[in-house]
Image 1 (cartoon, rainbow, N blue to C red):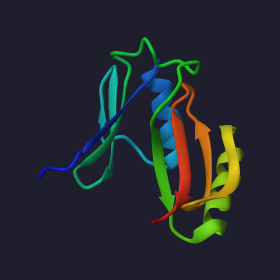
Image 2: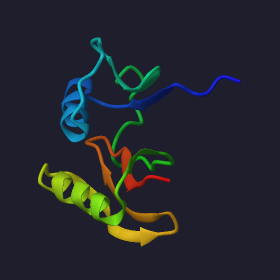
Image 3: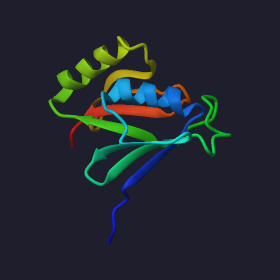
Image 4: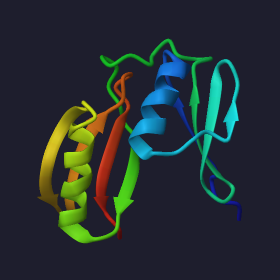
Length: 121
């Protein structure tokens, strides 16, 4: 069976979102076009931004999915990411707290897409 290898998020402004994610994750896109930008996050796995179908990509729209960053190193590592990202001026939805899978927090991108940081499973 083939596993999913493209995770696509709708955004209003692909250039602004590219700058946001490039800075946040400290990565560069491997493909750029006027309305679609892709980041290879693992061999053959892409996280992409698309402004081609963005009518609902506004912060007021409820989100039912998240981008996840699983950080090695336990609670201290998750808290360190939080501190680093707060310095970048991110919007916090959930401050760091302990949950069933460990230490976690949630922020949003400029369009309201959720980004969760948690420890590595």
